[in-house]
Length: 180
Image 1 (cartoon, rainbow, N blue to C red):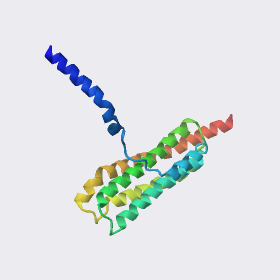
Image 2: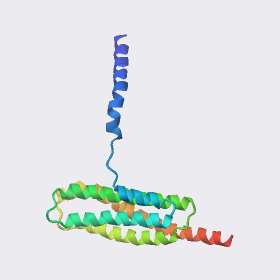
Image 3: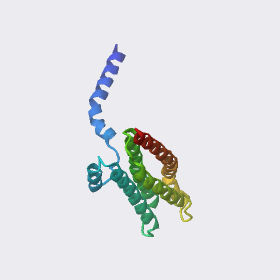
Image 4: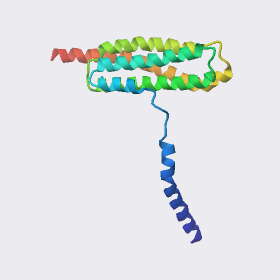
């Protein structure tokens, strides 16, 4: 019986400790969007064209900041900062993809903004590959962001293919809608 009593006490202790641990578990990285950007997206909720263009712009802004940071000779902890900035870029880019999926699911006409997204995909692919092929990066520095860079490249590459297919799907849907 002492073993059972001990297990019950341990279980109760863990149960009581859970509320103390939950803030640590719930804690996550800060939102990559600033309050102004969040407000702009909220205002554009019903306008797929504007909302997708905003996501492209916010993704581009993160990429530009990343390039500026990497080219600044005064930058310290470049590997860690590159990792964090790639993470922010990828979070915004993933939101762009989620919004595209939402608008496609609603059968919205997003042909115009998709063309802008596809142009941005090409731009992002080139910039991410430039980071990957950067000659002035040490192996130790690159190891700090290698996984995040590979993830970003894979995501942008596969999304670019998906975006091209989506344009065709939306154009077909809009043709059928027009015939009705």
